[in-house]
Image 1 (cartoon, rainbow, N blue to C red):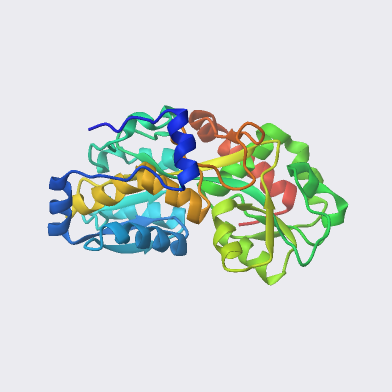
Image 2 (image 1 turned 120 degrees about the vertical axis):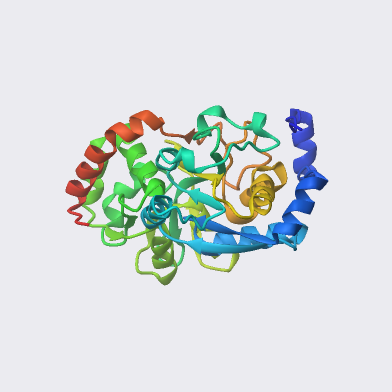
Length: 337
């Protein structure tokens, strides 16, 4: 059954009530998932955030035990490729921050579409087998105990006032940081890097490490993926953030159920829930994700898509320009892998 999009009046009522349309899976799928008992989830998502997602899912479906295998994107894709080559795939579900890269392995995934497939932006779907479980966007974050001049736009963090206090996640981390790098080069221009590099920013290996450095006070300000900031603010960290008006570069985690899955029903129940309005609302509200649904059930505080427009890379252009633009980025910042 395809779940239809609600109208705008329904959306307003939903926001006012603070609840999302409940996920109602078929009884047959629930019973099959109970028989499976659990599944193996390969993910490049920040591990703590994935565990929170699973905890929310288990409030509805406590009988599904999810075994998380977490790795950075590059390591995860190499492990999955090696398992395919050896015909020893362990994963039931694979979730990766580079949809185009995962799509090159499309034959390793089952035919799948969620019940609300029609509600998703077509451009966000990596393939008919791989779906945008997670959508995240970049913001500018700062340690409010260390700075008084709070940046609001991307060009603000090229100002001399932030010299020696700026952190930047490496462009080579994976699909998440590449989305930011491509946005900077395409929307802001190559001179953005040149100007920012004059501040001698500290380059960190991942977004998560950068967010940790902000909390510790190693740096005072940094571009950070919003999901890396939300749990820390919730836990009392002295962080603030802004979604820049020049645009919010977004990246998507594509997820699919493997052909070799030994417990496909449990994996499907989890993926269906994550892609449902209920699951997407939890991801936005609790973990700071955005959504690839055509109509967002809600937006995070400080984000008005009419003012701070979400920016998604064209997949074919991204693959074409990535090697050269990453080299330009590394040269501008004097970065070596």
